[in-house]
Amino acid sequence: MGIDVILRSLWIAFWALLFGSIFGISIGIWFSLKNFRFKRPLFLLLYLFLSLPPITIGLFLYLMFSRSGVFGFLGWLFTPKVMIIAQALMATPLISIITFNSLEHRGKKIYEAALLLGAKPYEIIKKILKEIRFSLGLAVATAFGRVISEVGASTLIGGDIVRKTRVMSTSILTETRMGNFDYALKQALALILISLLMNFFILIWQGKTE
Amino acid sequence: MKKFIIFIVIVLILVSGCSKSSQKVPLRLVTTTSVNDSGIMPVLLDEFKKECSIDVDVLAVGSGQALELARRGDADILIVHSPLDEEKFIEDGYGEKRIPFMKNYFVVAGPPDDLCKIQGKTADEAFKVIAEKGCLFVSRADASGTNKKELAIWKEVNISPDGKEWYIKSGSGMGASLILASEKGAYILTDKATFMTVAYNKLPLKIFVENDNSLLNIYSIITLNPDKVPHVVALKGEINDFVNFITSSNTARSIIEDFGKDKFGFPLFELLN
Image 1 (cartoon, one colour):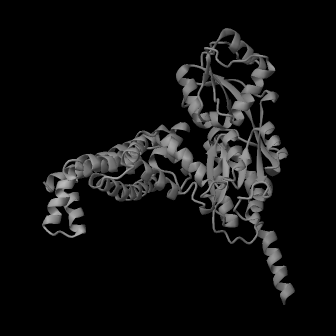
Image 2 (cartoon, one colour):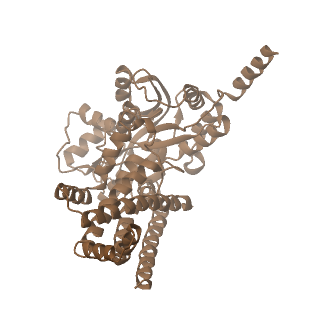
């Protein structure tokens, strides 16, 4: 009971965190290494996105992906795809800001030292990632907590459709609404366990690589 | 030979009640929380899938949001219970066909000790007493069919509850509002199906006003006008199959007639004709 819902939650969060990490880490590294003209406004924009309530992201995505919106032709509204986009949009600013903050003073040094040693670009990036793995672990864990528990945007653009877009957070809401506290509690418990496990693994991983 | 094949195909269509479906995307049915929360929808859809092999995605929202979703082209078919809004929806050209197909009744429920003594009154009288005595009352306040009905009753008794201390706006679905009402010891207007599913024997709420003909609750199925809502992607044939299944198939009729009997001793919905 509800296993498919749990797996779907994790599946959607996984893709969201993957995209969120790729974009977030890239933006963070780019910001810490390069100076350019619109860095400050762009940075403000990132912080704005960080503090944006998820439901507003959901509303924008709804209007864009509605069949009468610009991306309506894709038919992505009320599918997991648009949920992944929403969650990635929530994860990206968080990951990029944490990446940037942990690189702010060291980033350039690492970069220049690695260049002097004749490292190839991908080796430099590897080196940088290794240096900030603790912060990255924290960033991903926080982002995971943010996306897996998000309910407003997920309901608005996912629709809580059984066997399609019903995830843990939205199912808890719906089942509580129907007075099904039993199911809701079980899902809530699973949600807590998964979050604990996730943080546990990240702690272990950080300890191992020390 | 050709004629014979056509004949066979026609016979098959008549027997199964389904057009030949080459479905790529599921039909998107937008329905009210009251229909969905009662649990009747999954039963109907399973049978529909067996008969016609057509997948249906169900989105459960308030009637107001359901109609708005449809206006934007994000629904293929609607099941709602807000007659005045539905008529406007048809008049404005968004809706094509509207077929009322089942009904039940709204009821007024409240705390078991019936603080305001509304037992046995009509809905109008009960609302008046609640307002006069200032008993707590929970309103859905979400433009749903139930909310529209509630507002219509207030209007009929010439009371504007908005902003009054005893008037609590929940802004959420029927089930959540019932839970709120039980926590607050408040009165509430609810459809009987959701009351039985969510509150009966589970929450400290009791029905005090029912079987009032002014509390009739009619559910209609609505198809959309492709000229006005050009985004409807699902195939015409499948929409027709669904409408025919819900409104006239014996399978659906017997499901609607019987649903809830085993659990509550009486059906939660009644057929209209």
